[in-house]
Every structure is written in structure tokens, then in C-alpha cells.
Image (cartoon, rainbow, N blue to C red; front, side):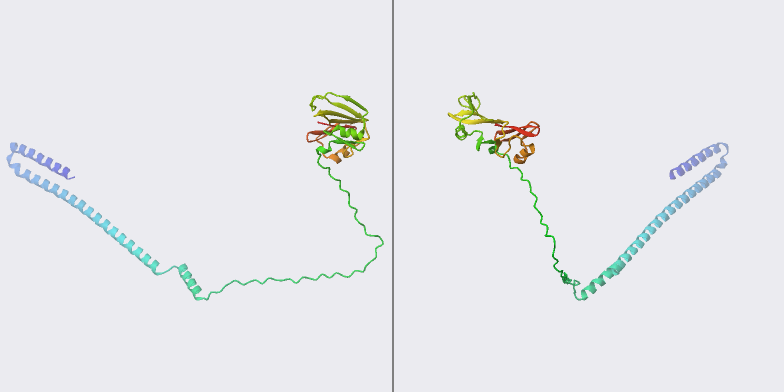
Length: 292
């Protein structure tokens, strides 16, 4: 703003100088008037510029002073309010704190007492049950006694010793010496040599027949042993537990339990690598076979 004012003043001075120069040529006596005009203009311009600068400076100073005063007043008011609040809070406990303090003080002043009251167990006197005497009334009928029902015995586990048949009180089983059987049963009804390349150590074997009983043997260290036993249609031959021709399937299972294998024609039991096979027809036994 000051630069603009000085430029304006300079332009006025230059203009007045040019007018002065031109006036000298035309009329020399006008010099004094022009100087007065230039002086007046300069004074007015300087006065206005100074007045405006003073007003702006005064306005800024007043604004800064007001802001400082307001800031100080606000700061003092805040400090006083905070100080009073802190002082009141410190000096006066809250209602809850006062109540707690009073409670604690009252508790400390009171003697310590226990509120536990033991509960006495209530004992009930047993009620006596009075049974009226009943006269002995003779009974015409005697008391009924329960007859125990017969519980069927479960069959024992099938073992290797069950692989046998009994003929004329002689037990015939696998691997038994045939000389012992022959001593008990006597001379067989029929006998013939039968080659045996399985269990026999010399390839020899024999077949003996006692009625419906057929015995195959094998040789081991020049001793003859029973290899297989077969009986068909022989009512006088039975297993060690009495299963014979005509026995039912239920009879078999009652004596020996659940078979190893079973179908409509053969029921088989196995133990120790030895088999007992019962041939079935119309649900009845028709034959027995012992072997491996």
C-alpha cells in the first residue's frame, strides 16, 4: 500500500513538473500557483495515507490486546474452577464413601459375633408296626411246592477225544493201535491189504470189516494204526455220546453243540485236525465217518 501511494505521489510530481515546464514557455507568472497546488495535493495524499496506516495499526493492536485479555481471563477462570473442584473433592468425601466409612467404623466397634447356628439333627422315633394276631386256620389243602424245571445242560466243547465210535464196548478212535482193537473185537469179518501212500511209512495199509464197521489202517515203524473209521446202517454202532443211526439233528447239537460246518446232508465237527462227520437223511443220522 505504501508503494502505491509513493508511486501516485511521484506521478503527480512528474505531472506537475511537466505542467510547470509548459507554463514557463507560455506564461511565466503561473509558477507560484502550480507549486501551491502541488504542495496541497502532496499534503492531502500524505495525510490520508498516514490516517489509513494509523487506523490499521490501531485496529491490529486493539485486536491483539483483546485476544490476549480474553485468553488470560479464560485461563484464570479455568484454573480457579479446577482448583475449587479439586478442593471440594478432596475435602468432602462422596456419600457412598461416607456410608462405607461409617459402616466399617460401626463394624469395628461392635463385638465379633458368629452368625452360624448349628442345626440339631432331628431324630425320628421309629414307629412300631403292630401286626394283629391271626388265628391259625387249618388248611384243607397242603401247600403247593414248586417243582424245579429241568435246565438243559449245554454241550461241552467238542474235543479231539470226541472223535470216536463204540462197538461192542470197544472204543475205536484215530491213531489207536489196531492190535488193541483186534484183541478186543476178535478176528474181523473181512481183511485185505490196501496201499497207503499218505500216513504209512512203507506204503502199506489194510482194510478190516466188523459187521457195519469198517476200519482203515496205516503202518508206522512196523506198527499198524487206525487211519479212518466208517459205519453205515449200523444201529449197534454209536459215538462216544450215544449218537447212532436214527438220531435227530437236535440230538446231535444237544450233545456236541454248534457244528463246525453244516448242510442238509452232513454235519461236521473238527478238533485237533480230526473230523467227525455225521451223514443226514430226512433230518436223521444214517452214517458216521471219522478221519482227517
